[in-house]
Image (cartoon, rainbow, N blue to C red):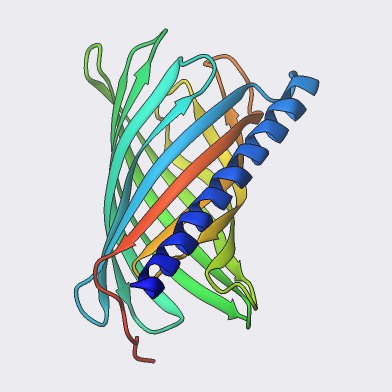
Length: 254
């Protein structure tokens, strides 16, 4: 009973520390933004849940669902779900596929609905003692609908994402997630007000056990914040990510 309570207090303390760091990041970012309003246009908040389930040694169901919004103006918000599958070829390579479903609420413009099938592959390399790197290459077929008349537009887009995390030697339950991602339109054009070009982020994560992970990530995003504006570093994004694994992967064959 004592050990159970001790474990519970440790986990609760971990969540409090993440909340403290998140608040500190937010206050720092807001202060910096007030000092340079010409560069940073918006503050966004993202809340994401990531379910994972390993069907067998090779096949994994995963995905994410969440809510995104501009904090100050409340002129834009998005709800989405992206169910996906990953096939582990070995410890280094994997194949991905999924479907994104998005609904974008625009306060001053017409709402948008988007369906995005996608395919990709992942490379896990290099693998170091306390840091790992992963590369995800995706091809997306974006089909967007204007909800006023349900007229559709199409875009084929390539995405490259470098991500990973740094683990600590003595505090094994804590880690530092990081990533950088680039968007490249190939053919077609989706008629949209907000347009992403690239983003990057770094944060602090806590893993209380094998099934749960919770992290706060501070993101920078290069995007367009209006229909007539150019692409620039326009967003600070504060993201809370919760990950739940229902069945752990034990080993992946080489």
